Image 1 (cartoon, rainbow, N blue to C red):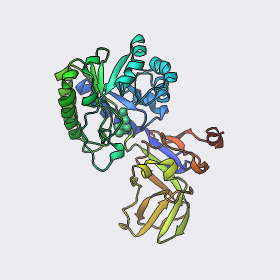
Image 2: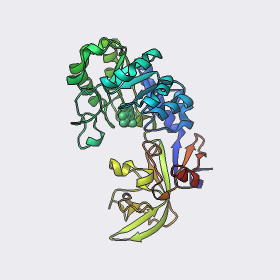
Image 3: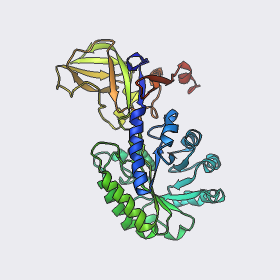
Image 4: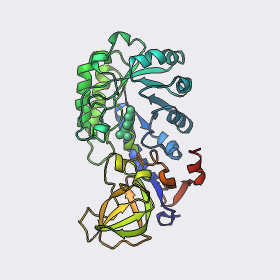
Length: 375
Ligand SMILES: Cc1ncc(COP(=O)(O)O)c(C=O)c1O
């Protein structure tokens, strides 16, 4: 089956592009000695974990289920950070994970002894209080009042005897210059403590696989920290692993007009690409132009009841007919991990585009998948 024959809507992930991304990440590991983990929150397509695991050091999780998935499907290093752990899940988390990162001293005091008994590593998430992004407070862990990471003011340096590493995550789709200024903030606030650590985790948000990303500076940052403090640097990008490596293919179901032409498609921003509304952003669409750039202009919208289920405004050289397929780009990340069945919408198929150009349907969802989440 090729791309034109698949049933829509479908997330199509391009194996060759995933390989290209992880191969680039591996060169950073090879050249610096750092370790890079897949942050599963961005991309949990586990049928590709065996491939990704050939290049990366392992996985990181946000909670028990991702930790389980990482261990079952990749089976390499497995880390976890959660702002707060639950007593009922912690024993299993400890059995699955190598590094367990706490967001507070109180969580460490409560759960740390179980980590030590299991001979696993304890880490603490710090808050460098250094915002490097503007206009995206929802994605800024250094924003005022944010619950993530221990600030310098609350950092109890006399309680670190069982801590083997520090973790920070402050970036979102950013270049290495922002990492560098963050490292300087980390050094100012926590540098003295770093000498006693075995590792430091630079979190995610590094747009490493985007064209133009300053790789040389990233490598300098890693080498500088590793040499100065004698630690192993971990990175845990999610987005960079599957950046621009997937599509969401949809079919035009109808055309209506209200102050302009509107295409109703068989995929929903609200259900299948929630970041379009949450972030918000306008996803790239193959063979289209900006609003008013080309002759034929359309609003593209989903089939749910939400008036705001609008994917964006796009223009085309040709008129778009009912039945036309449209291909939204960069849809592997933060898409299938966040989708939902609001309005009883079917979930898109999950498809792999193989290197020989054939498409394999990995998963097709049914009515039962909708019903089984309800009662
Ligand atoms: C703690 C942590 N690590 C890693 C990531 C992955 O970030 P990204 O997908 O932007 O690389 C996130 C994203 O929110 C995160 O919160």
